[in-house]
Amino acid sequence: MRQGSSTIIFTIAFLVLLVAIPAAYFVGKNQNQSVENYPSSTQPSPQTTDTTILPSPAGNGTITGTLRYPSEFLPEGKVIAKNINTGELHTVEYEGLLFDKGTDSFSISVPEGTYYLKYEAHPDTINPKIIINGYYTVHDGTVQDATHDLIPVKVNSGETKEIGNIADFYYGENEPNF
Image 1 (tube, rainbow, N blue to C red):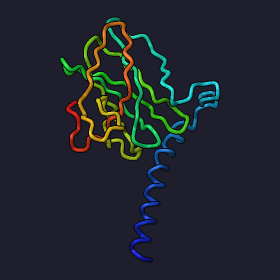
Image 2: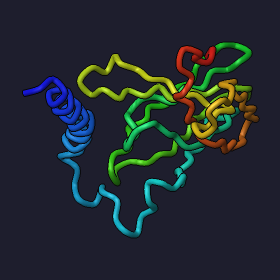
Image 3: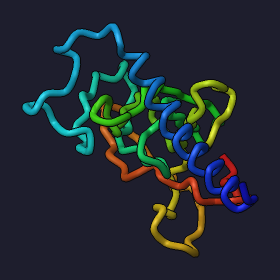
Image 4: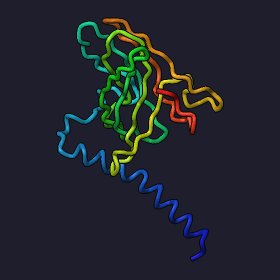
């Protein structure tokens, strides 16, 4: 077999594994759930940003938004809000979205303050130590030469602040200073 053919076969095999491993993980993860836990035609599609907002503890506000990832699925991970004045971190776990299972939205309760946000994605189900960060920045994944400046989000006590997408995975070697 020629070297060019071997490269093509290897590339196809790699791409199949890249899709199959996360799919197998999510299918296996939800294997024991009953049928009523799966989305039905009467439930909102996972592309909506409908989020059940739980009451925040007294003195807290809530930040809601949508997660994006440069692939066909959204891997599990965390949404992290960092208070830009104190450095205090607030985290909420994210279960991921594959096919029609899961949601692309998040909600995080934080004390009153100003925050930077990031989505700490764990795309490799075999090695969860692999982390790819996406940030809430002025770059939304569509503009080639946009800056990657973090957008501060001000939250007041009792307020629900709806933001756009946490979608900036395109910073290359210029990862934002979180």
